[in-house]
Length: 254
Ligand code: G
Ligand code: G
Ligand code: MN
Ligand code: NA
Image 1 (tube, rainbow, N blue to C red):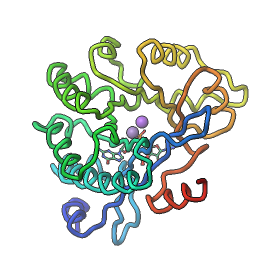
Image 2 (spheres, rainbow, N blue to C red):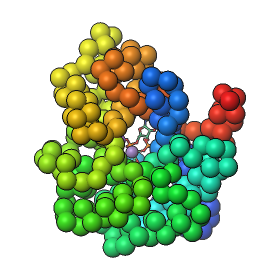
Image 3 (cartoon, rainbow, N blue to C red):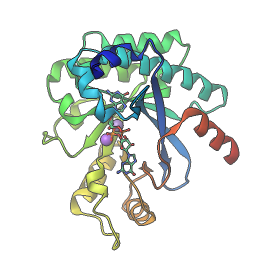
């Protein structure tokens, strides 16, 4: 039995799950966003992380179906956030290069959000840097459609894509996600590299949010905060959680 056949059935068999990882305002500790992270509850192999099946899904042309499921589930969860007066907490959805390049992607996403009776402002899309560079004209139109409607655009894995910086000015971006490879070296001394300082300064100058990914220790948190990074994501704050566990935690805080 091939994994690909199993994956083709995963939506119909209700085996997909979304976990959410909190994004935290470093100054206040407030929850500002939730990154939606796909999981596959495989009947024999257990809970699989996307690294083990996203590539397969793309090769088998199943990513569009998985992406539709992700957006539908995210809309259901966003509706619950709204009921609890948490609509300012954005749900950040990862979009693969292949999904992003599908015709009508932006319009279908907006239609789904509207059909759920939600505001596009409850959502952010995370797109890897390299995917933005493929076809600038198409990218520009697609992002403008989303951004004009109020969806925030985040550049995922920022700093790893060997791309020119010009696009930062020409695209309607909202957030840079500083890749965790820049956070990992911030160790005992808490010293921040010139590259990280430059990225933070650039984000500030361009009026973009910067989210530091993979923040694992109090030293990393403190150093990034002092360097002017406003938002953090990583095990220091929380692992990815099921939506139910997340809500239970929020209730305890309130
Ligand atoms: O949760 P984990 O660290 O295993 O996620 C690894 C990567 O998988 C993430 O960086 C993200 O880019 C990708 N990923 C997670 N969820 C989704 C999803 O719903 N759609 C797509 N296209 N990629 C995802
Ligand atoms: O979109 P991206 O590939 O960056 O997805 C984030 C992934 O990173 C998730 O799969 C999540 O499980 C993982 N992750 C989240 N926080 C941390 C962290 O603090 N350290 C490490 N090593 N991985 C993390
Ligand atoms: Mn991401
Ligand atoms: Na990332």
